[in-house]
Length: 510
Image (cartoon, rainbow, N blue to C red; front, side, top):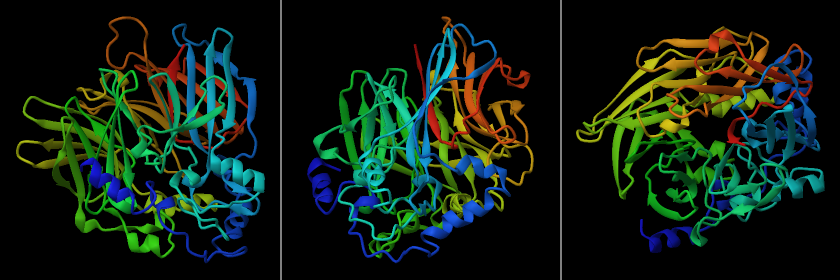
């Protein structure tokens, strides 16, 4: 799409997602209805009966610095800061959010130094967070919650919760949320800065939560403007120079992540389609999507030098949040892995049930291995039976051939949500190296950190991640030799702060 058509499209309304692009109609929710206080009441009743609800209780205040108790020794070359992001304020006043994705973002900072391991947590002072906490109540509709008497939302960034991920690039550290702009913050003090605007035309446009940084240091990312059916592409050099492109996408879907090879960008579009009429009628952004399995899973392939020439392929209908990595062989075949579920019931119903303290099972997960032939236009898919999420790789291999996928995994049937293990899957042999934390531990994303020695091979380094021990009500931060997960952590910090379960993070080396 050329710049003129892009600007004309944005002139139709706010540049952001459906959260801010449509007029706010009178809310049908009121205090005491299922849309308001009953979520809080239901969760409160479940707290004593379901220990796992500790991970979804939420916080109201920042967490000052504290030294974590350390078992074992931190590797000498592991010095720096792990920054994790996730929804943390789920309740304000008498309203508890109805969807896990709605909570205001908090940065969890873990510092690795010669003095040990230290933690602090701080809410991001977004426009929304400051206004609502000053008022002592919710003021705006959110991703999956209607709020009684909500104010009109002039832009998506008015409702930006900055709660999904973190990236450090070109000298800046950014908190990411796929519905609007990135939010600057100080990686050391956790002080919130200004919103990041990449170009004047893209002010307020979504900048999604899973950017990819290639071997040349360039960052690639995307943003979906659902109400306009637009997909924007960002390329940001290692020094911060920006190149953008935008194209129209028919039947725009809910897209959380993408994959990148040395030559291509790949978007898997599940058949969870944005319905503009539902949005105009006042549905939340989540409820403005309709499951249309007859569309299949569409694969959109864009050559980095020809972003205006999309290539489409089709896979069996399914849903995804996260990709692992992609690479292409000399025959023009793109090899991609992602975590798949058969449908979108998890995001549509399951994550709402969690906020009421209810759990009745999760959709089956699988690791999907995909081949996309850019010459013939054919696609094929193989499924591996791993109930897993949060796939991560050795980031030195982004866009290049990789053999190892790290992930949180559940290996035992459970009466609670989430994962109990961390695993390394060898994609070619299918072999798995796994450490199981235990039935009473809820495992979050673990991040791979390469060894600092020159010439280290793929997967040589450390796997670092957090987990919530329900029995002791402690948060754990574990360090594994990434080649020997089954041997258990080489070091593990713990603290009496049970943190809300979050999403994604990054490590900044000292």
